[in-house]
Image (cartoon, rainbow, N blue to C red; front, side, top):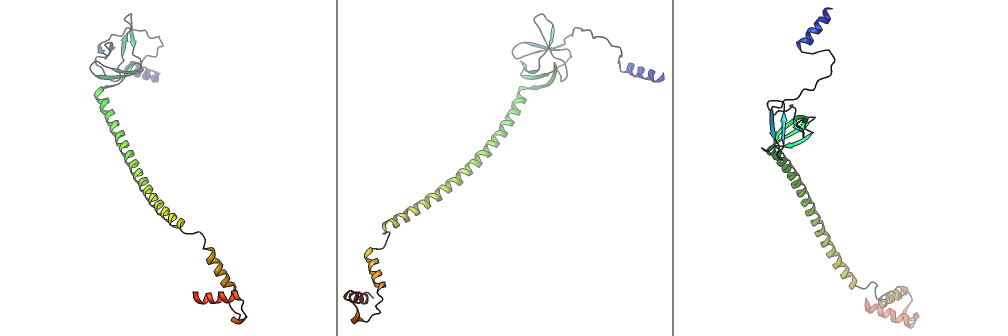
Length: 191
């Protein structure tokens, strides 16, 4: 029995009741009012606006209605965020703007780095294009030079060489034919 008494005393100390009963809705007495940027009013049952306090608005009949989740801008420039009918965050528009500016600065730095990398890539591509144009110009000059030269040696030169090489002049001069004698004399003149 002493354990049961100990448990009851602990419950009494912390004002805990083990009885099951349906809670009675008592009207919430609103203590602090806040004006939104659109001119409507919001209320809390606490004596100050703070994180964790309940937030209400009034319906057409004047009943207290918990605020829906979201972000509300106050008339004084502040911002209040509501989650599950309670204030989850209180801030100022300026603080959000400075965070936004910091994010914008980071984005600007990242964009600056991306642009720098892009310009470096463009510069390297321009250098490659320049070297390819120079190579193209030199190859075009070489093609022009080669196109002015004949593709094959002259037929006359080829025929004379062939005839000379076909007759090695191993015969004695007096046994040569007239054509061989002419080719023999011609080869002596040429050499």
